[in-house]
Length: 258
Length: 359
Image 1: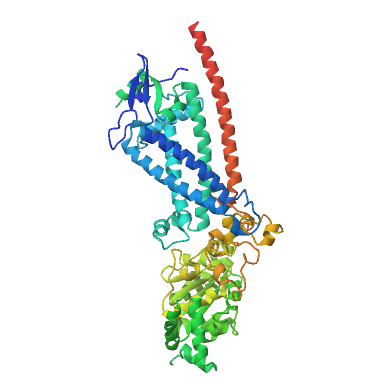
Image 2 (image 1 turned 90 degrees about the horizontal axis):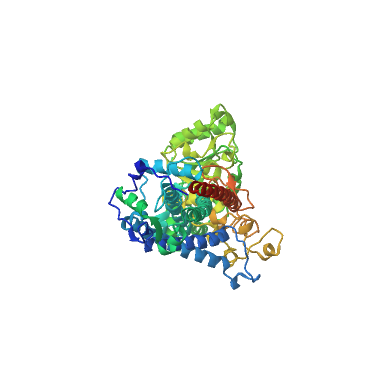
């Protein structure tokens, strides 16, 4: 399938405002194809820790909200600690999730051009719109992106960016609300005002946004497989190895725009 | 005229000083003070005079008054007769009509800046729903609040809007904090609040002449510091993962956690689990009924009482997050499958097309 390209849009490839973004490393394979090191190691590590922690958080989270299993010893409370463990794993994973995200934020500044995104440009939104049309099988001017397309970037801003922040704030509020005088309690008490004021509202946000992550996961995994199927550029293996196989002129086209 | 101190009133009524000290000790304990601070309570009661109180009722059910008169520590008669001078109340006053309104006006004039205003019930935005003797509830409240030293909102209606403000809120009911902002207001939510909490708040104001320490929502920390869940007598069953699945199963008989039958304990701030009700006899969860979260904002809309739900933000609607979430994921998966099918077909078309071109 040929990829429609528009030289006009191609000129304005993703550039960040605060620094000149570092170009991805390339290894030429032959006179037509190059291997591009798109996802650097920290990005891949972030991706898999993030995926695994969301998986664990969701399972333990649903169990905490709606316990679908009971303790096997139906006697006194003394003999089991099922909910206690579910909560413990949930909280531990939450800290992993948070630290992981913090490292990824650091890599936004430190990483290569594909580790960042700048939505404060008109071309970002124009290209995102072209991508929407592309996914709706309409006539479009979407170009081929070596990293994420702007629509994908937007989805990460919304779910991995904003969604994670909502989950982190509401989550730590719920964790620390029994100790309002503690330093952690004080750090997160204001969160309640942002999410409706009372404990029930904060909890509701936490439950609803969690399912937002599930919807995101379905679409994200599908889109990745679809890209791989259509482009045959190693999208799926790239999240393990970091490399995508791209045509030379595509890579040069992106880099010339800088 | 010099007003009698609380100690003098107690002695006049035939109690000994020893009884008085006992009362003060019980009071200090109720307020959550350390035993060593009992002397402060005694000193205050020896010096301060009874505080005049005006108790206004608006869109309420008198449940808070009913709860108040069941206080056991301190006994309600000692609060009513020794500590406060309840000058105006619809439920308990012998006088009525213009007579009682006169009494209110009298207190407002002679004890300006000294009396405590107690409010039970919410206020309607539309005056047509509550106007007594030609004066709207809003007017009565704002007028009475002007000279009050402090305002105590008893119950969830005056604190949050409560049941009158529940969906669809026909009267456009609002909490009292919506109408008066320049006075210290203590929220004592609950439907009704615990009797000892109600008297404890008044006792604190009399003892120290200041408001008790309040949390970020304006509730006294001494009584609304903990969630029911954190002090629950069934908490061990929660942590163990032992839940009553219905009200008549073996778990319910064994006293297992009521989380799965809709207990709102984890989101409810109140002291039911510590102070309990009816003189410390029991409280809903102990008696086998899940907490309905009556002291929380919008508790009526956070229902139904016996299921676990999540609220759609900025609405008065609750949904089952797991069901709705699973449906959302299912719909997305179906959409993805359809999209994948179209993609495959398009790709085949394109390939056939390309092959045709090459030939």
